[in-house]
Length: 70
Picture 1 (cartoon, rainbow, N blue to C red):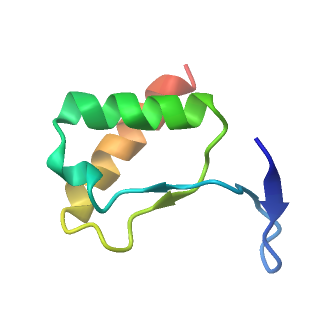
Picture 2: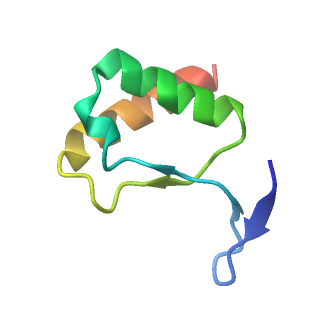
């Protein structure tokens, strides 16, 4: 994965991101699998700006990433 440095904070962000506007229609298992695959492939940018169920997706995103780091 290729990364770019953010100008203000200096964080390294993947050049590809995962948008979540349509993922919320999937089952929790499918969402977890999609996030897990994204993380395993170096994606560290998740766009949740247009997600209607931000709280639910945020929790799933957090739990899945924590599982991936174990």
